[in-house]
Image 1 (spheres, helix red, strand yellow):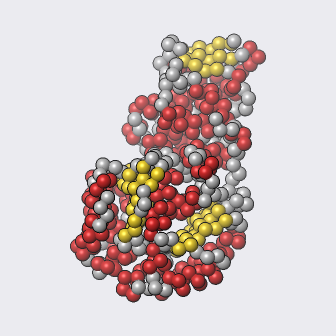
Image 2 (cartoon, rainbow, N blue to C red):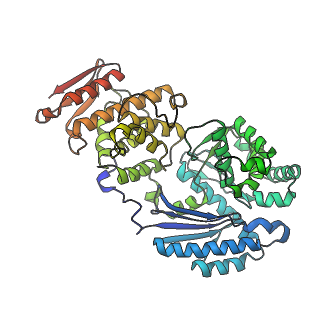
Length: 506
């Protein structure tokens, strides 16, 4: 098991290992800085400028003049921020617009002077590769079609079993599509269909998920969340059923700029691209027959970062690494994760509740996060822990998994109610998993009462389940650790398990 005592992670105030990436895209120029280049990267700074470099590619074959000025201004600022933040390693990449423009080479020469290093100009195949790499780094079990929609191009690549096939790039970014169709949606639809028909293997994606990458498609997901009053505003691994995705794209295509601009949480600079981005998604879903749309907040930038990690780091579990990082920042003793995982193993093993590997993984994650809410006022700890876990910047987990961990965090502190702030999550989680979350939360609550949140006590005790009881065994030398509160919390756990409480001094 992971040696937690060696894995305490410094907070974002430690900048020695900061990693940054500048992404020069067709629509935006962005700098993202991570606390370190790690398996579960934590962003500590993120800034974009909607330069629109590719706005005039179709008409002139050159980069947009105003876009060039905006991009250069952004690069000057990013160079200054690199020095101020103390970025140890910086990657600079350029994509479709710069790649295809006649004046792209001149742009790169000036960009090199401003940022003080040569940008890496990615081919279309490399764009697709890194986008898929990013998706796999955040959703390791992804199995379907990855689509990365930028301002000037659409990259497509299939993934399965942690591997990817060679990808392709198509000239279907919203900026280019709007220009090529002269704003005519019927013409734009024909252009998209003609391009997609050239990709002979797309129908083989039928019945598999479509993993959507890119700012325009993330905004579509935000609209879908608002439509359905979805309580967990986390875009990563957010799933839209095929029928609802088709309805949404059809709706967005028909809405004008004024109506779109009134939608909350949608950037005004994204509004012109939304209808064309929706059109591309709709035609792609029709062509592939995908089962659902799953949004990935990880894409090209995270793929570039992941590609630079060594093999050992790449093989780590992103969920566990993310939980370790969060616990290292917030818990009193991050090492408790080891103790709690071992202590709860018997209760949830073959002789207890039982668990499959996926459930064991979530139990480990819950044990790592068990103490991150300790510093909040006692009256608010349960709700705070639930919200913090639910909205944590971790990947490698779907939304039902987030809800499971959040419920464990809530019950680790108290009661059976739900957070009023986030609404009723019970109906969105399988009843059996909701029950397991409550039992695990009550188990962790018992553990912290028993050991007074100190290390080294729990390993000397044993918790297991018999046909009639939940049995807590405490050695003679620790018998004074048994008290009224411990007995009360053991009884609450046993009641939830449908058994009697049994405390034994051995």
